[in-house]
Amino acid sequence: MKDLTKGNIIRLLIAFSVPLLIGNIFQQLYNVVDTKVVGEMLGEDALAAIGASSPIFNLIIGALNGLGNGFGIVVAKYYGAKDMKHMRQAVANALCLTIGITIVVTIISWFAIEPLLTVLNTPIGIFDRCTNYIRVIILFMILTAGYNFCAAVLRALGDTIRPLIFLAIATVINVGLDILFVGVLEKDVQGAAYATVIAQAVSLICCIVYILIKCPELHLKWKDFKFEKNIVGDLLGQGIAMAFMLCFVSIGTLILQGAINKFGTATISAHTIARKLSEMFMLPFATLGVASATFTGQNYGAGRYDRIRTGIKDAILLSWIWSVVVIAVVYLFAPFLIHLISGATTPDIIETAQSYLRFDTPFYFILGILIVLRNAMQGLGRKIVPLISSGIELIGKLIVAWILADRIGYFGIIISEPATWILCTIWLCIAFFSDKRLRKQTDN
Image (tube, rainbow, N blue to C red):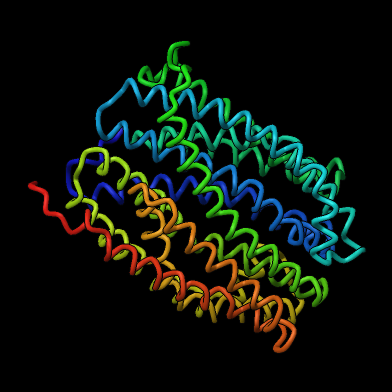
């Protein structure tokens, strides 16, 4: 476990972030392997089916991830304050909330899939494949929610190494099962979904075993499950705010997917490939976001506002360094990377995906500020500020889908995210610089 309230800040951020980053890369590899195997073994229509269903998957799973991350912020606050009693109560109450909410979301999602795919203008030729793929994911989402909850609690205590190890194991299993289910057993896109959920089950089991053997501070007793109004209120406030924040982002992506689906399967495939690469490039930003939330949460519990200010600046600096690397890679190797992860050889698909990447990546400097500040505000308990920034992003994507995409085609989709990033960052900067607590001086 790692105490983030003392020691060199930039070293702590890197030590916390690097294992988390590698773990996130492994998690993304689930989807990349699905894309590679499906694209090469089943063709572009199957690839388009996974691409068209991905925004729905991201919406549902993203909401549960946000819930877990929000719960983790509360746990981090008590851990930073060295209040172990309330920390365990927070973990116990969060566990109950995770199970209950996941069951409800599973039931609602199961019946909402086909109407959602219809609203999103999913081409009829890939509709059944989309439904088959996403329903397997939904049916077993309790496994994903369980792993994300355990990982969020471990991260709240400063441990990012073990979740990384467990994800690495699961990713290797996922690769083998993808080839088995899709290539050997010919289970079509459902096979890729089965491979993903089995791999998630393995990572969850590993987390549970590790906590039982190595984390006595997380050994819960019946008294820890006592309903505490203040703790449950804090958990729901942070968890729901974070879930809605990610939901707004995912809903915006869903809206864009509906606009993209009008352009046909070739554009869907190109956008799917570009988004897979973008999601991998954005992983360090997401990692720094989680690090910023945990770092801020622990130091907020300890009353160390001076460290919070410095930590935010250092996290933004690290995000800018990564932005330089990504821009260089995209402009030098985009066609190669596009072919590498998808097996695509059609010139139009490669060119469309390349255009998306080369336009968006220079705006990563803005994105880094956005993600760090959004998560830091969450760690400070300012739940509404990041929620409003996500609402701005949602409205921006609505405008693009309703106006720009119809008038200027796919280029309207390409410019949507940079435009919304800029608006969100302006709002978050205003909120950050107006927070009186961050202007207070604290003795080191």
